[in-house]
Image (cartoon, rainbow, N blue to C red; front, side, top):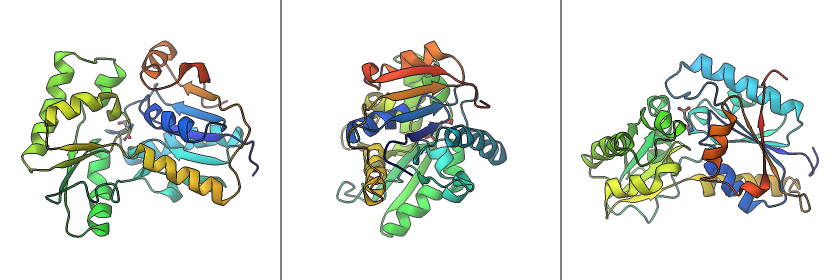
Length: 266
Ligand code: DGL
């Protein structure tokens, strides 16, 4: 491994760009190769074996581009587990943080919600991790299957989107949570709407910056931080390049990105 090698970043679709923006800010000299599998998003209502197969195609693509680290900018993939994602490759795998430490000092009533895909909620990984770190905290997961398709379809500000956000926020409100984690990387696209739907008194947290801090520390420890690269990102999608580029403009510094339509087999 050497410092000049790129860092790979993967998601099922456009959501992972909400993590890529923090990566570019924290590590301004790294070369990132982002893949959003827009041809097959969402992953969150697919069977586990199918998700594993799709992830294997993305990691093989990135292995051929000689990445030094993989940031999994997707909770649905992260909960498969690091060993399954790494699958014998020799780069480090950094998954999305579950936010167990972020909620400390934020929740006052020790009732915390998280919004995620149905797949992520069904694994119980977030609930188990947060309750293990802080046994006094009660955690409530809310599957939000309508949100990823609406975000991918650019339905921002529509009555349909507002109703979906309200539906899920209302479900979590019945548990009297005062802190909510965005445990799907697509949801920061809706951070304002989600905050509005909860109203004052509920703090909405995005674990992306913390996850990026972890990725940075691992590279630093291994002396693999690039001190002098040009900091550009190759932002790659498996379908609908123009739509994905419009969505990228919500999140990224477009002047530092080169967009590509890719075939994962090449
Ligand atoms: N962005 C992904 C996540 O963090 C999932 C979206 C999907 O369902 O594919 O979970």
